[in-house]
Length: 414
Image (cartoon, rainbow, N blue to C red; front, side, top):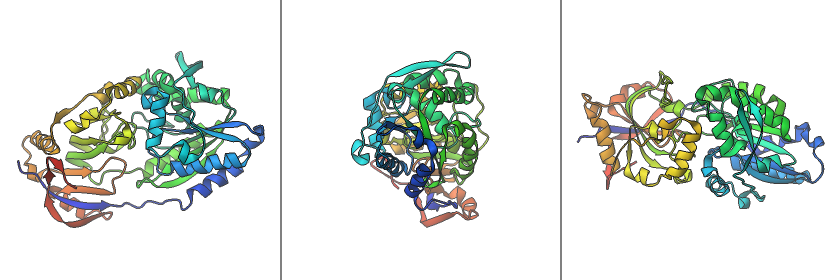
């Protein structure tokens, strides 16, 4: 079949960024009053999640060095709920894919798949805590604040969720997700408050990124202020988050998905799809078809979010660890997100089928956008049907001449 004429472009909306993230982290830690409460030589756990946060290694490095310099003994606690298959080995493997290792940080990583029930909240929802965290002598919570991909509330992804879900291991994640989308916004803050009351949480470092995955702000927050301070940070994060340059598309092609880009593989806020039974889909962007071509190696086979697509490739499905994927998606209760879409042997066959499925739309005139992933939208390709709209955008710069969508051995060429 005929494929559309495509144009490459740089998409660069204005994005402020911090000059020296590590210096700011050290400054925040120096000003924190919590150190007066910690006995000399105490073992202090620092949380590390499964998300691809741009400056997470420098931030963790600065934090553990500061703790060492104060005479305490730091170590890393994986705080990722059911990610990594809910096992210590899987958790460490996920962290290694993000550059977080014992060698890179110079401190041990103490992973545990065991969680202990410490109480209940709401309608009898059990509250679980990672045993390593429960036995710590101090905890520093580090996470990025950003809009969640499944629910919207006063606080979404951030320190509060890291405490309630991340430190809850698989058991805690499953318990809090068991009430579905309406329960998350209500029970996560309640569970976090109970954990903060029970555990020696000393301080939190909240990270806000811009649309280019650069750190805009780091905030030091006292544990009793997590919920209140995160609400303002979330507003900033929502304002700065990336968005597709076009709001109406016939076909969106995502070259790669994975947990390193979003908790849902492809960010639902970017693609405008939730795929949660009984919940309305976002009004914008309006995308008729989504095709995803590959699964990033850093996702370690977890393909949660594959069900957000309509079409995919056999090469992506060949990389899927269905055990890890199902464990993750069942704990969320949003099972549609793990359902395999129509799949074909090559990228070429996959995209041909996606274009044919549009019915009366001439494939050469289809509104098509190709992105590398939903986290980095700085480089895009768009079809000739979108040229007029592209030229009207001040932050979209076309690079070179148009060329027909090309494939080598069936694989889409950049």
